[in-house]
Length: 393
Image (tube, rainbow, N blue to C red; front, side, top):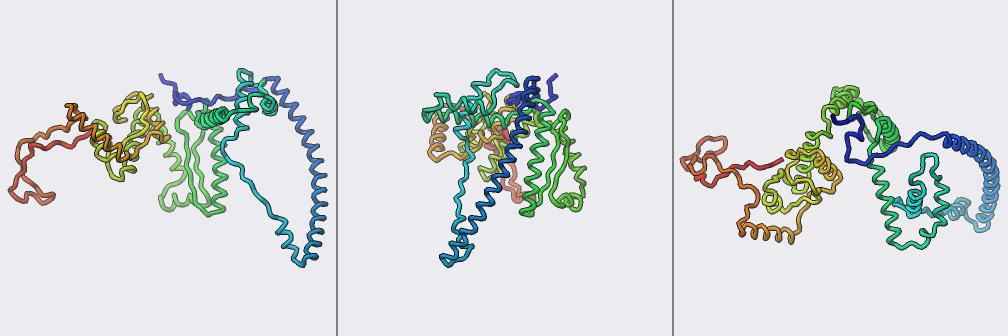
């Protein structure tokens, strides 16, 4: 029987974020010592802050007196002098990955690898070791780029890793959504926007609880207009999440097919469907559209005919990430592809699957106007007629 007790168990192909080990007795004693040291430092810092505030007030009084002297001397207002003196330059730190952080990350991985939870070096100790390490002194640009790339990959892996236990996942859900609620409350206060949100757990084993959230009186919309109580909506959402089981084979087949079809319609700007068997002729040569980034090892066929769960999981992940996508071919590529098709046909190769021959091919049939019955006795030859059945998804 397949283990589905946790989110990590239901996603075996994803990296797992390991939980922290409980602190040992030595670590608890060290934390107590650090807490006592911080209390002493806080008291000393408070005394220094009092002295600093007194000095700042004294400086502010001297500043006001000198501003008034300058204003009187040059016959200008007090506010103009303060405005001229109050110019500041604000520098915004970039949000990209910094080399200093990349160095600390590399050194931490080097010195803390294999150490127990209570024996790992602190950030200050790692920073001091990195400061005197000669390999970080005169680095080439390639070495710097490698460190930055390693840290970027680590952060991306950390953001996309799954929680290994249900309790850890529930805590992550609670803390993240509380942060989102604060942002939305501030946004509603500043802009007057209305936002509602419904959330539920994705599996019966998950410990997070379903709930709803709304700014101001937005939840009255569901009661007054839709005639639905928010509690009823979130209850139905929870039931739907239990039944849907998006990580099942059927759920992944539906999701992949939906993403592929909707993406093709957006790019082509037409209501068309994918024909995998005749893809080279029906899609690629006819519309000049190709699919990029199809994962290696996954057969190029309709997702509804793929039964391997691992193949479906890989295809779903690349489709959601956008690495597998539809794109128009350049004019040169399209012409080259069409020339290749002609050469293959000339060599006698059968490209794709021919359409199924009509059951009444070769027999004459009346021409009928839609909705009006037989219009005349004219007949047409259907010997070349073919059915339009295709392997669409």
